[in-house]
Amino acid sequence: MKSWLYNRLFIFYTFVILLSLINHFWGQTWLDYMIGILAIPMLIVSYPGASKLFKILGTAFMFAGIFSFILQIYQYMKFRYC
Image (cartoon, rainbow, N blue to C red; front, side, top):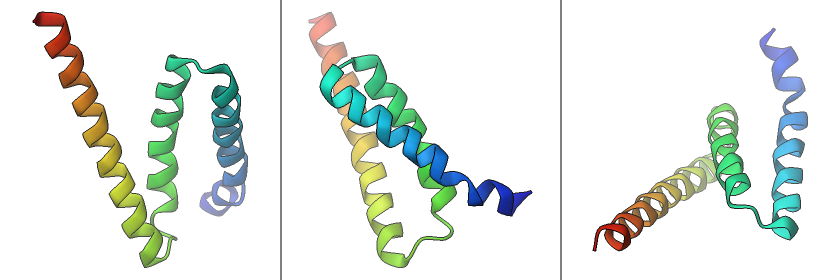
């Protein structure tokens, strides 16, 4: 079962990349969040088989995204309640 799933991960990756490409031209905020949410399981699933370089880069980008998201929420709350 596990190898069947891992042999077809390219379908999931292709779907997320196509969504990202569509959103680049369409520019919908909700689609940005959906792509971000789908990127998290992509990173988790591909993490064990990745090389050390990609593990480091994936972790760094994940923390940068979390930091950016928290900063965005903070700025929204600051603007809303000031």
